[in-house]
Length: 140
Image (cartoon, rainbow, N blue to C red; front, side, top):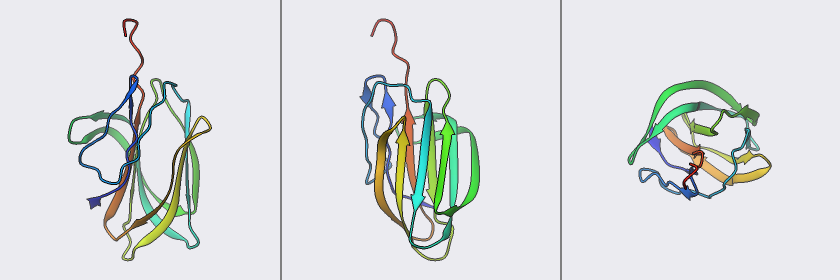
């Protein structure tokens, strides 16, 4: 699958933008959220492949998953995920159908909206979202 989409990651006091993604949205925050809510809405009903992970490594060119879950979901979709400590989540949505699909994607953490955008995925395309909170060290 081809990858296009967004990324929002948090490293101690800063943002890490993964260079292999396009059309990215990013932000910073110094909180350690306990949950993330994923809301996908559309005027039509269709299936997407949803991959989620809270155990992954971020390198300069990729995200390496150490453990993940893949499900086929139906849009509209609304689910809240509990985050571990430190908070981290990798979300990948993929269009496994034969036609392009359009939907609204909203990602909320602890009442703060990190993503609220319209997305269109051609067959085989994916979008990704990455959030990683690194605990501050005592010296900085």
